[in-house]
Length: 622
Image 1 (cartoon, rainbow, N blue to C red):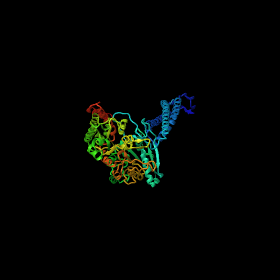
Image 2: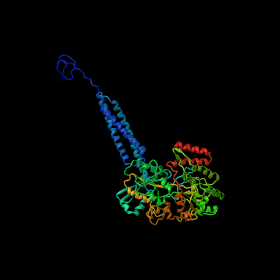
Image 3: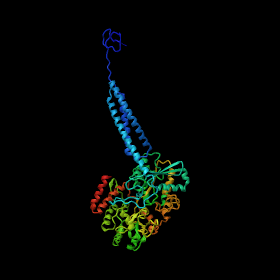
């Protein structure tokens, strides 16, 4: 009941006029309010769009390289939010539109937008999840297909590559289990030791677990304290780098305590974009300066592994190069096959190619090629430069690198090579003595002998299951110091600055890179004493190491090289090698320069034109 404002008589609530005096009751008009349901539906759908955006970023950018449990958990949360949010947004928007229509409220537009967004969100979520499960299924099939891959298999002979311009140079990394279609394999995890404390060790090759196994055999107390998990990511197309970068950028429980990098990418982790994650050896508690001096580590190894003068990485291999020459050809052309005499004839240690090319002219007179192809000399030209490619953000062509243009032209015009390409069938045939001209010399580190030349010498006799002197060129080769110092390849070991196992990490790294005792890895490696396959009767290859002190007290003779002790030449080769010109992006620039040298040598461009086009390629692509 309400009272008339004029006479005070009570009236019905819905009365428009007073029954007593006829006075009209006032009419109160209220504006319709905003539909809160419509607004809630719109907001819910908009939040869902943000969740879907994260899912898309994760799937299309991060998913292939990420092993982060946190990122994956966020992906699952985003999926739940998007699914439930889409349903909630749709229901709220519809309910809001109905209520707004009945009560003539504002905000129906938010409801319409919420319904539209919910429909789009549902479709997008469905597409992303189909993609997600399709990728998982594909990866599962790959993993199953390669699960029977042998752990320590290696090809008897590297696969041939198609002949192409001279930018086909690779390193020892070629010898992995990737096939030439680019197919990659799922990471392999192996554990050593049974201790409660975990050390995670990441690498691209299987040498690392073999090292860890050897160390724990020698030091069982280490295995009682630690479990060392070795993750081997033996994949192509930079997958190891991408996974490693992500794990360092977004640390989690599976991030490595120790990680290994190859020479082609080492500077990125020691001095470049990812160097901030590496602990110095001093921070690990290693007396690194004294140990380096005692081990007599080659300077190029130290330079690549140093950040602002502090060592953050060292290796175990020696990859300084030597000249590997054919003794029979040397004796016929120069009257001697003695390494000390050949060093004089070819200008060992002179830092230039003058004497070598004098020798090349004499070799040609007798019908022999000095080298197989221009790339055999490129490594020495490239690594012997005094200045880097980039100085103060400007492209710089060091004279020793520029000289390669003329060297390539000389080799071609004078017939001093067979004009082959590294890792091609012609290159391997020249190692066997089956090329157009028999080849006098190859240039490379010890791995070129052990893992390339021996297998391609023609010396292996399948019926006897052994190599035999006199078959192919097996037994004809010798080594001596090169005219120009260089190195090729290598492996560096780094410790994560965030490791919680500093003591154990330091112990392993020091044993691998600096221990010169007869139980240290480098002595065992140099003398073929690492028990790679748990078979004490298996004979393993001897090899060069980073420590000249270790090589000086060891001996390495090979039938392939006439039972010459090879270590003295490699000690010298390591000392000649320099890394003062090395930069993070060398490989890209090197490829452009080798292309320019190829075009000039083949007469496709004149010298100035080749250099100008090289500069254009660098500026356009870097």
